[in-house]
Amino acid sequence: MREDREAIILADKLGFYDAFMGEHLTDKCENVTNSMLFQATLIPETKRIKLGTGTANLSQTHPLLTAVQAAMFDHLAQGRFILGVSPGALTSDAEALGMLGEDRNKLFAEAIDVILAVWEREPPYDIEFPDNRFKVTTAKTSALHLGIGYLAKPFQKPRPEIVGTVLAPFSPGVVAMGRRDFHPLSANFLLARHLKSHWQNYCKGKAEAGVEPDAGDWRVARAIFVADDDKVAARYGRSDDASPYRFYYGQMHAKMRRSKRLFVFKTHNEQPDDEITDDVILDQLVICGSVNKVVDSILSLREEAGDFGEIVYAGMDWVDPGLAKQSMRLMAEEVMPRVNKAIGASAAT
Image (tube, rainbow, N blue to C red; front, side):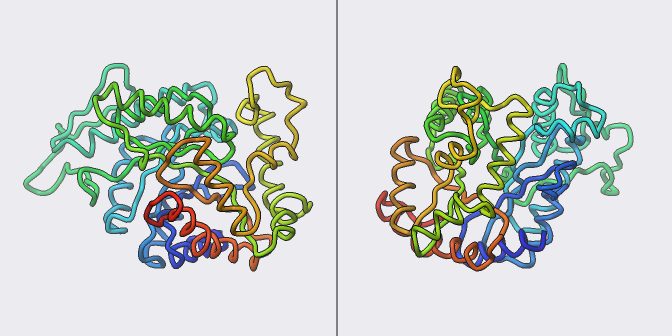
């Protein structure tokens, strides 16, 4: 956790636009249990970077708590806050909470309705939706003249940016994001060939809402390692047994196989499971090399996926802190200025 904090402080100094932190209750390898609490420690340590939950798992708590705690965070950060949300996919978290049999996607949708209503409505509150288990009321006990019965509103108006992480190819959830003006973040373990499906579904949702889609709202996460030398990059980014990228994707491979979600690594639905190996995954999902090679890879990714607003640099453990920090510096100071110059965009990583 100290290393994660150091990485975000460095990202702030280097001009990275935002930093997302995930959360799990039962994962030893990803041991931040509350992303908002973790990010709050970085408010006084950073100056420019937006701090995001990546994600807050909405099925795991009452949405009123998420709404008022996110609003407080937004005030503490003076608007340097992004609310990243998801249902919470880790089954061991759900089992630990006694909700393994619950429909977490339905809980997620219900929670979103309540969070937005808390932020949009004024007291006394009587928030209730059909077929939604969450109800929020202060009508019986409010004493507004004493300040009792008010719920916190965010600092940003009308609300903070809401970002949803997207894992599956052709995810129907992205359609809903487009309808509600949430912004998609395509996960770093989704093959590049499937990224375009996220944009297509986002456009569909925007069309249903009668709004023109903006490619600037779409984030794409990738695992990236930049070095001064291609051989060093290949070793640390892929081939070395101690490579943090090999460890991470080996973990993801095993977890997706265990949860029967290997489809995220497949080029087509009928691809046999035994064709999905750690090396195949690394070859497809890790961008590594010298500055010029990484620039070319990112531009090729953009040609394949289409235009998007932000590439999210997926952080890995600092097996070699010197190489890890240098990669971030090269990404910010060399790679992104060249990428943005090539596409005619302003620099933001």
